[in-house]
Amino acid sequence: MTKIELVKIVSQKTGIDQLTVLAAVEGIVDTIKQALVEKENVYIRGWGTWTLKHRAQKTARNISKNTTLVIEAHDIPYFKPCKEFMDNVAASK
Image (tube, rainbow, N blue to C red; front, side, top):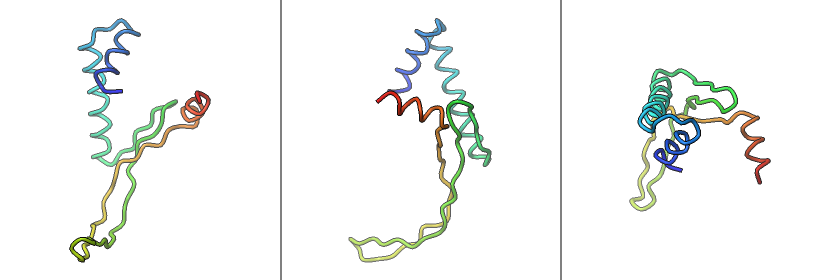
């Protein structure tokens, strides 16, 4: 599902026009991104948690050039769905 498809479905379900729904969806996504940039976790009850996971520095190999390179330590965004959400997805099989 794309963002536009999501906007259309939410608009149909709620009766809110698509431009308003699009602004809300983009606002939510931008707010989550900004919170992670500021190293804040985002918790949405019934859905899940966005956090940052720290990756330590490591050495990697480029086998085509037979060289090694260092990948610096960095943080990556991580989403963990809540148990209720996971149970709903598992029950839909």
